[in-house]
Amino acid sequence: MPTFARSNRDIVELHLRWWAKQNDRPLVGTFAPYPCPNDGQGGMDVGVSPDRIVARKLAHLEASAVVPGDSLRTAFVDYGTAFLPALAGAGFEYDGHTSWAHPCASSAAELRIAPFDSAHPLWRSFEASFRRLLAHWTWETYLPSTAIMVGPMDLLSALLGPQTLAMELYEDPVSVETRAQEAARLFLQVYDIQRHMIQDAGLHDGMADWMLTWLPGEGICYSEDFSALCGESHFRRFFVPPNRRVMSRVGTAFLHLHSAAISCLPALLEISELDALELSNDPNGPSLPKLVGAARKVQAAGIPLQVSNWKHPLTPAEMDYLLTSLRPQGLKVTLQAESLAEARALYAAVKAK
Image 1 (cartoon, helix red, strand yellow):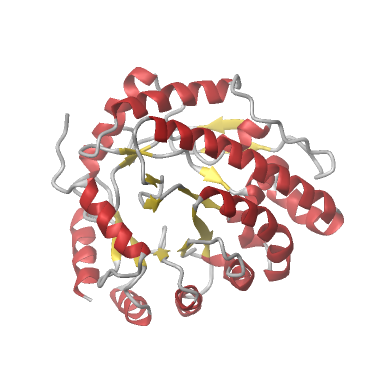
Image 2 (cartoon, rainbow, N blue to C red):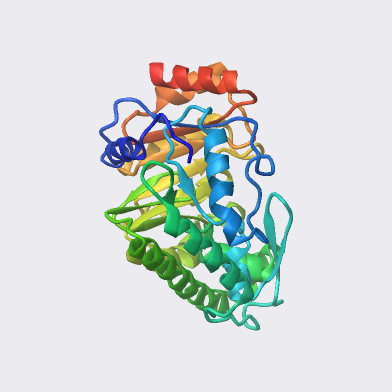
C-alpha cells in the first residue's frame, strides 16, 4: 500500500478555508506529465475488472504524487462524460482516453429519456467497480468520488447532438424545456444512488469530487459545456430552471463552465443555489482580460472560483496579471505544465504571490 507525504485531512482543511474564502494564498492544481503505469494519465476504466480497479487507482495516485498541488487524492470509476447519457439512452463509445455519446433522437419532441435502470449493463459494470473502490478507501490513500456527471442541458446535447439541440432552442423551445426537466430528474436519481453508496461506505460530513475538490456536506461537481454555444437569454430560459432544480437538491453545487460561455454569466449568477464555479480558459475562447473580468464578477458575487487553463499555457506575464487582478480568498488556479520542473516552478510562483 503506497504512503503519501500530504494528508487528505490536511487538504480538506485547506479546501474548507477556500470555501469560507479564508485562504490567504490561492489554491493551486497542476497538470504535468509523469511516468504512470496506467495508460498514460490513468486511462478509461471501461472493461477494467473490479479486481484490478483498486490497484489501478493506487498506482495512478502514487505516480501522480510527484506533481505539486493542493488537490485531494480521489478515486472514481472513469467512464467519461458519456456515462450518464448512455444511461439515458444514448449510444456509448470509448477509447483508452475518453468516451463519447451517439444521439438517439432527432428532435426534442421525439426524445424519450430512459428512466434509471439498475439492470443497465453499463451501470452494472460501473457499480461493481465502484463498490470495490468504496470497500477499500481510507483517509490515508484516496477518497471515493462519484462518476463524471454532466448537467441537464449537456445531457440533452449528448442525446440529440449539439447542432440539433441548438436548432431546437428556436424550433421547439417548449419540448426542450420539458426534456431538460426530465434530464434533471435522471441526474438527481443517479447522483443520489452514488451519494448513498459513498455515505454507506463511511465517508460523511462532505464528499470528494472528480475535480479533486472537497465539497462540504453533500454535493457534486458537474458540467454544462453546451452553454458555450448559447447566449444569456437562452441560458436564462433553458439552463437556469433545470440547474436550479439540481443545485437546490445536491447540497454543495460546483459547476464547470467553459470561458466561451462567459456571456451567460449574468443569468448563471441569478441561481442563488450555485456554490462554486470553475471557468476553464478555452484556447479559442475570450481573451484573458475578458476572462479576468468575468472572474471578478464571480468573486463580487461571493462565490468561490477555480480558474483553469486547459490546453492553454499562460506566460509568466499573463500569470502575474491573473493573480494580481483577483483576490486570493476563495480562488483556486489550475495550471498546465509541460514538465515536472515547470509544474514545481508554477506552484512556487503562485504561492509566492
